[in-house]
Length: 120
Image 1 (cartoon, rainbow, N blue to C red):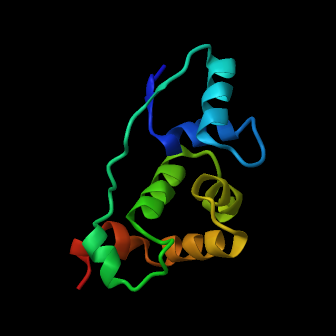
Image 2 (image 1 turned 90 degrees about the vertical axis):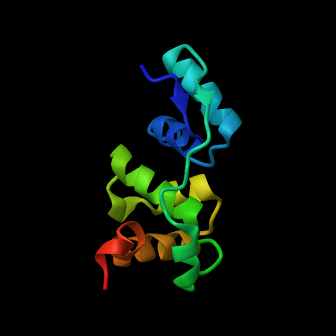
């Protein structure tokens, strides 16, 4: 089993058996209870170009870190992205409207955000 996780990966890994607000401390404890060891937390490199995001005139909570989390969440398969709002709220500490707005932006501008070189 993998021993190094980013904060988002750890939260996604343990959120399946924990409902509600999940701090990193709680996530580490739950992981240890479930798997018998505490993983090492590592920093995740943003996969989105911050300069490009700045040109998109998004609200302040839609940034490279939040969009990287969205990509991680989708790739993890923990949830269907149409039902991802509670995961976004818990992981990024956003209210329901902000989380829904981030999800909408992610879905609407996916190609622009992750593959800007393919756009005209």
